[in-house]
Length: 323
Ligand code: DGY
Image (cartoon, rainbow, N blue to C red; front, side, top):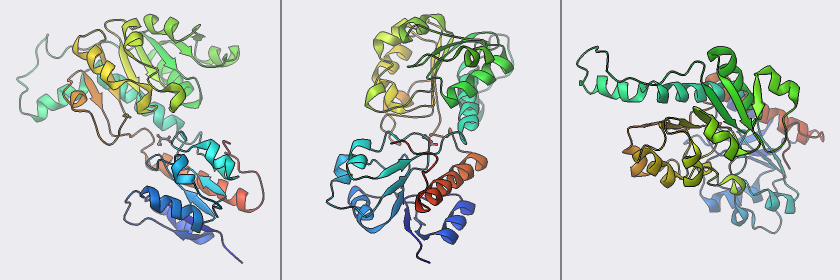
């Protein structure tokens, strides 16, 4: 039987690559080098499905083609703002993502960042590894208590709710959420949460603010100097969503002039290039986009892509269609 021709743009977990190879006429990216834009355009002419991820910027130019062979972009990842949906739609290309399976691990990482920033874990490790620790003393590297504080969650989808679950039930935190649509009362009740009128209403009320909203043009620089000024002077900002949601220049200003307590980032506007000013800030914890980076989540993401491929090529609606 004819197997659909499928291109995987990056290295995936071995178990998933093996399953893909059984089921499809698959080309893997064994060197794990990101595709150039021209290679991506060519792929759309040569393959039935292309399996991109967040490192593939698929703008209108990448899809400026007369008659692409590709009919499915099955994205490996929950975020899909790197794919220009109107261009995909113009070609009748279906786009899918991988929700749910990474929510717990991404929320675990947001908790990690929140705790690291509050308890100065990055600074502490740097001091110790640098051979600069002189021993215990009552005033040494004193941080901020997390338990019982107020956490603002911006974007109350699956990951935001997992964050609320951990923070409220594990750390006794009070939860305030900002979401573009009203959140059902029974969902809020699960986490003892209240919904703020808007983001400007949420920011001054929180000790910690964690971002879980989509990226893209709609939320670009949602957190800017005006909104950073609305935060409490000792509050912390956590971002595991997308880099573009924060104006990094404004964040550096806020950290430098100590108008907020600190910040922790897993995502960056121009990643993997990190602004020098961010690297120089000691009040900032940074990780290299590790939100979903567990064996469990990364394998589950791959198998979720396979579900979408199988449904699509069997003529069924793919479960995670986003357009
Ligand atoms: C996503 O899924 O969108 C993450 O950023 C990568 O796991």
